[in-house]
Length: 305
Image (cartoon, rainbow, N blue to C red; front, side):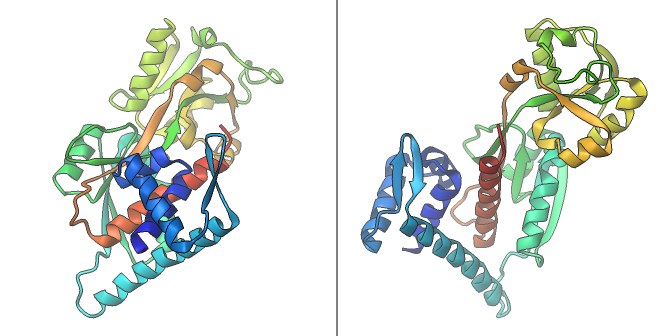
């Protein structure tokens, strides 16, 4: 039953059999059979279907709470074993692409530290193909990349979808207009600071400009979001940032605002966690992967589109 409880918890956290099957590397029919087996063993209905959504029953919520408790007890058990000489994993090496280093890695490290302060977390950065190689060669336990990876040697867990947003100083003449929104063609000739070439984020930006034949007035190209934020007022320039990087406090502290541009919603990219997925994976690493995926699933459900 422990395996079925784990699978059930992942389905709840992903709110989708399809997404859960990707994370668990199970076919959807096999996943459905596991859930049906658990319902049969418990003698209760765990989900009800509301349209295309899965909704927990009251007994399903009770079972999910128990599954989370068992997950934590399992990790504490591994820690106890380590005190008697069992080689439990106490460190985690994370490979992060240049974009996820600034948008996703800080939140991930905070979540893991709060849940497991004893874990020694290390990180290495690089371009996406470099992170893929590190994970494939077992030089990193997991990788964070701002794309979906199709590699037969790796398992790819989608964490959340991201898109670009237009950000500019509040004192800019465009931002100063109350309730303003812009068309994508308004980016023509607009003074902008762009991220340096070589990341998915810049590739997506260049693809956007090519698609709509846009020629903004590019003042600078910098490989640091923080540096871009500091220079926007000086250069009287706008920028395009991943939605995952934008925080209300960040906007307020830098006197910036987000300007709605409908077409930017189409610049979607999926940030993913990659790992080796082998059967001999350390149980602690597998647990951490589940907790990371659960955290981002909850965050995606709580945030407006």
